[in-house]
Image: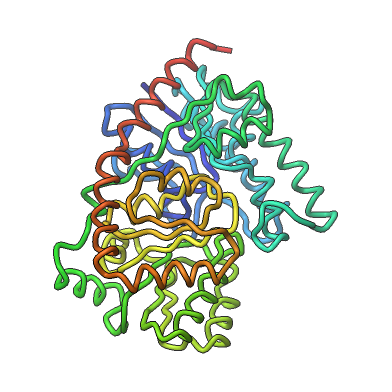
Length: 405
């Protein structure tokens, strides 16, 4: 089958769960023998065109800065690439993020007979969360609510123009239902997977120490608590820093490793300094993909402190595959992803005290922590294979071709 993936951004150019999922799916479908073209936004000096892991990648230019400037550049970039013949012979269009999806699905866009939407979260709610301290609900400026209203209509447009919709969780399926109940009948839940060879536990303490050296954590004292996040309010890193400070004040030795970058980084670094965390916290920035497995193997506990809109949590899946005990907030789909994982813990979002207490209980019981790590890997081996998602995508693509409208 000839497939055209259209996205606003993709991994490894841009860091994020949705970006990782769509790139992994495209790559694995190519391995299954499909001809896959990925049309995505250009980041930095990335090549305008290349073949990567069997996928033909075509990048269109985007303009950063004001949102309206960025939105217009995505529209014009996608439309220009499609008009130039990118994916002209594709049978199925696969869209992943609302801005690029609207451009591809609007009249005069992609000419594929089949259309499948991979829906991760309402972009309108993600946009409003920036003004709500990372929360799904709450007050927001009038101008922001106006933009969100337009984005919400865009979400509905994409869903309605797609023949089939794939979501990663029941939580995301419920969001589809809120946007348009009629679309649920053609919505399929297909959990994401994880590369179980790429992400695996450390063989022993010597390997774990070597991994820590490799990723810049060789001087860490005490257990390493890891989070991998975009540094924006919705991800809850400010709550994790507050929890770490409480643990330190209570006498716990630990080192907090924060991987990722984003608009909140400087504010979070100031918060860590104000809390007196000093050398017990390391901001790693964006960690190269080749180093991510080593980062997980170096850690002792993975923490996902999300405040809202966790559509799945690819980093949670990677942590489980790496044999890490997981502590997460009960936000979005995290409860689904961790269901049945022995030793995994859930606490309410935006409660640093609850994070600190749960972490203290985990760190104070090394045997339970070891058992939780073994359970995490066992769960990943049984539940987080990519085959389920790929099979669901192929079936949705075949169904979409029956529409031919």
